[in-house]
Image (cartoon, rainbow, N blue to C red; front, side, top):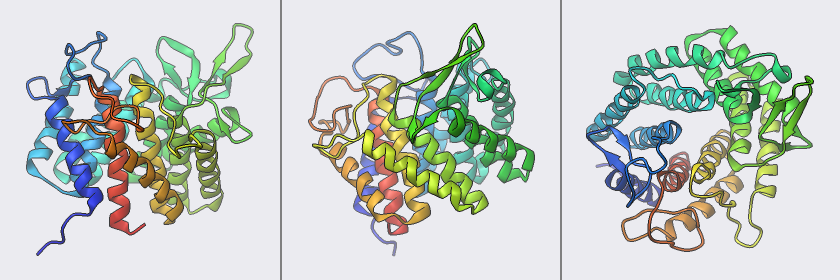
Length: 347
């Protein structure tokens, strides 16, 4: 007789079901971007939102393997490739990084899917590497059309993907390249503990910081250092991860509610879910109960404001109702999946 799921797993299942019922498009094998709106309301299909939807489904499959879900995951991968005209390569380096991470996750939890996932990763990583240059001393460009802007999302996703891929296949050079990207972030974009979004190269050869803070850029830096600690055992990486997490929670939390600040309903709707994923990695790695409590506090608030069909908007202090974007709901799914994961390890 199997044990009943934890309350967090049950909540995650319910939010995953709402994701499938309200956003999944079986014929297109993709997720719609917003409820009650045209299919692609902004004239785009949001590759990187699709990547996080894939990652969220893999979270659920890792927790509770299910054949119906596995088929949807494989269909979604096929839908992304088909939408890319037979390729996973995209004009945005961070987009490709997010998909590479989701595919690495898929390859880890599903042996039948591993060959296809690793084949696509083999296509994505070389494409990501083309975004690296000596502009501003290193890093990866945000997009092919913006080679003079290097940022955390493109560089850190590329770094994490390279370190994970290199570790899996035993390629020290790939791990080393990924590690060098993490060091560039700390050297270039972290200032007195604050993680800035990116840096612009100017015509005179100088570089200027883009001094914008987002929850997900903090999460990525935490995730990169947590991964490096897991790979190397070097406590300097763990110390950095803990320090960045503390800064994120100090600067990105509403002191009145204890909730991470909302960053909109478009791309920003996903940011807190990404922070949650990488804080979850750190909490699992260190058995940090205080950090786990922060995750649960935010997840409980998101759960309590779900609407009549189980969707969660950007405001975790009240139920908004009406249209909900895929990005908004995904943040709640990703966060709740981390709480379910913590329940399994007893943190």
